Structures are given as C-alpha cells and as structure tokens.
Amino acid sequence: MTWSRKRMALLISPVVALLLAFAFVNAPSAAASTDIPTYSITGSSTWFVAAGDHVFVKDTVADGYTALARVQVAYDGFYSNVWCPGGAGTTCDGNFDFTEQKTIGIEPCIGVYNGGVNPVVLSCAAAYRLGVT
Image (tube, rainbow, N blue to C red):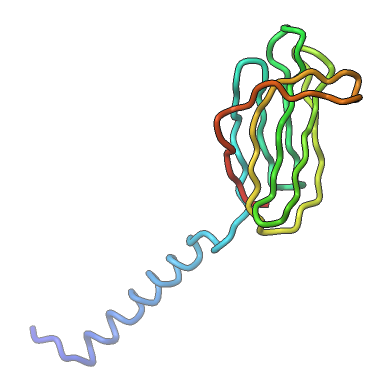
C-alpha cells in the first residue's frame, strides 16, 4: 500500500498537535514559585513555603542558643532575621508579603536573642538556599 503525502499529513497532524498540547500543558512556568526544603545546621532548621511567603525556623537542640533564619531577597535589598526564642522544639513562622517571582535565599543560624535587645548571630550555614516567591 502506498501512502500519499496528503494521507500522511492527515495522520501526522493530529499526532503532532496532541504531542504539542501535552508538552505545553505539562511544561513548568518560566518563573514558577518554588519552596525551599528543610535546611539545617546543629540547633536550627529552616524552610520556605512560597504559598503565603512563610519562612519557618525550628530550634532543634536544647543548648541555650536561639534558632533563627536569615532571609534575603535577591536584587531587592530586603534582608531580615526570623528569630525563634521559645527554646528547643519550638517552630516559628516569619510571615512575609514578598513581591511575586523574586528569588529568595534562606540560611539557618543560631544566636543569642537577649530578649530582642541587641540579639547576636553566632553561626550560620555556609550558604543560602534559594527559592522563588
């Protein structure tokens, strides 16, 4: 049986259209929001949930130090610390309202809170982990 160009075009066109439709529906958006999974050092764990712009920090060791998360938005100049002074086992929520589609970095740290008066950051992870707001 000989296939004509017209017959081949009729067969291939729906297949190509179906494949293209599948590719576009399942392709990630160019700048989709991304969470940051748990990132830890001894005494402090932190993570970012893009839905609602929440930076969580948990004090994981009863060592007398306070867990905190350093938060920075790339190319924005925004910088903040989320302190969690409740002691070991406590989780705190830094609820922000970032501009959408911005790169955010978080870093777990430990420090001395001093009741919020002149708190001191003592030690942090070696680098920020990144997500998108």
